[in-house]
Image 1 (tube, one colour):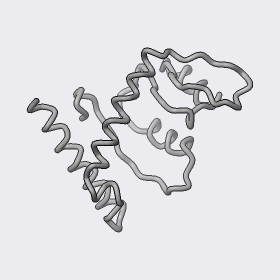
Image 2: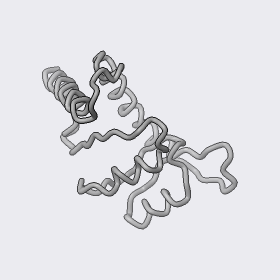
Image 3: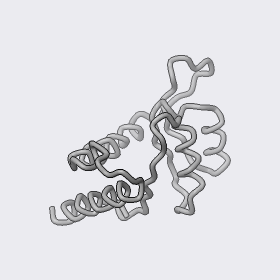
Length: 126
């Protein structure tokens, strides 16, 4: 659960993996269907947008400069993505997360979960 009480999933991919493959891993999960997908330009693809629309999910993704077909973005809604970026910033305050100190993916993700719980508990106490 994240600070808003919504389910959250963490996963790890190799550094050279494109955003598209990470997107497929997360969207294939058994989490509740989101209403909106807030994503950065790395996810700007017609196939991603079409897949989201077919699942009745509103894609809020700014377009890449190289995009030929222009697509608008809901700017007030996209500004909420700042919350996600701040969450990653808080996770990276933990040195083990920022430096990827752990050797195995399981121990690294375990520490990401522990750090997430610490952040959540701090959020609850304020």
